[in-house]
Image (cartoon, rainbow, N blue to C red; front, side, top):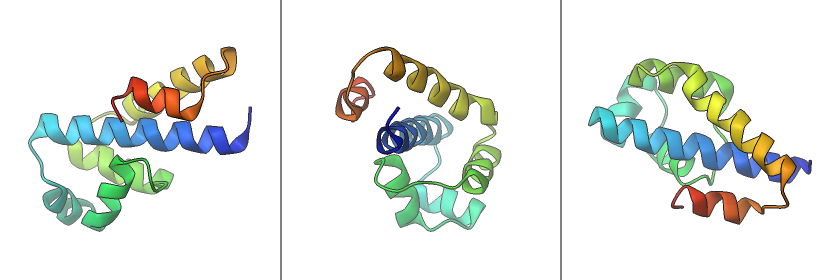
Amino acid sequence: MDPTMVNEVVNEVIGSELRAWRGKRGISRLELSRMTGIGHRSILRYEEGEREASAAQVVLICTALDVPLVTFYGRVSDELAAASQSPRSAADIAASFGI
């Protein structure tokens, strides 16, 4: 699998999960920023799939949102497996998340 595609899928899935869980918890980007020490603009870029969150940042985010880490990375694994079985583009995968 193309490394660029892997990065795009990871960024889109992490962003989608972050946005969904932040919304479910009723936490603003600014609040999450204060809870994690991650800039609110970075959080926005993660949610939009425009910036890669490090593993440490994902751990901080999951901890702040009280979401198991496997929730984020489990979905990444599922999407990468699906992408490797079909010639879907990163744009197609992003569209499946409503992005």
